[in-house]
Image (cartoon, rainbow, N blue to C red; front, side, top):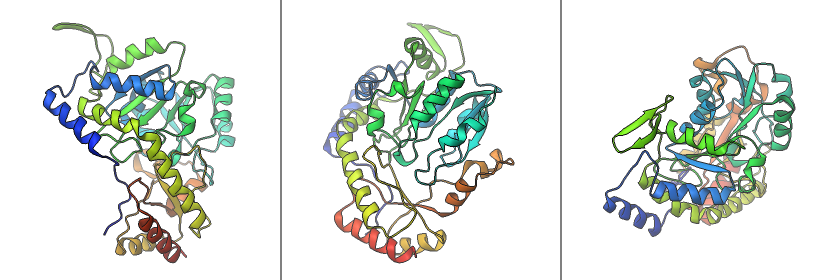
Length: 360
């Protein structure tokens, strides 16, 4: 039987919620009422954010968050080892991505290198909590205050991580989450922007408009458009699933942490993801010298693996003369192992034994 890399973790609660929403015949609203509004309120309580606005993806969350900062012709510091949305949101808002190398232990951006990249044109920093592992926010926040730079956290992997359940306003301006079906909190499609700012209510109003084609001041069939928006709002079915997923998020993450602890202890590999109780463990990574052969052998034994990610600065759209030696080395060797709450003890034993056997 095949062991999948990722899987949603559901039960009758999600099935019932979806069926009830389908039968209600109220499936979506650009105004964000119904289940969407309920989910926003619950997630706001969970994260202790000033405001939470639901959207239809983590990509949409990043795009909107960056649009609030007016980064046109300004630089944004980002890691290259991430999903391409982390960089695309900069380009889509007229900004200039400035790639930074990573810490080889955590695969998050190396905070010691940030200050060297800061110029008069630097407007924002996007730390990525890679795999759910916390970036060094203390150092990043200190630099953001010193140079008056905004922080937009890419927490696509970090829903439910202990560091994101603390008052996330102490981190930065915005924290962007993804609720892709295989994320820790999964939906058919979804994302969210948590805003932490003294002007949070003003930004909330702008986000509500931007996620619904710029629509404001709606009154029956009349409404106003003051700035460009997009079709980014969350649907009612996704929110219904999200409400049930949020109720069990701590339980699901506890299972993930237990699996990560076992992986770290029993995998006989030098380069592997470290264990910390603060990590959400959306994924678990290792590094192997012959990745193609390793993945082929694991696949032959029915174990799905992945590569997260090809470094963004190696794509044609982003190629320049930047050299990121650690990112480039990791990018050639990284392999992600199965990580989801549906794994059994037998699955883990098989994954660990075969990984130790084939990774040498």
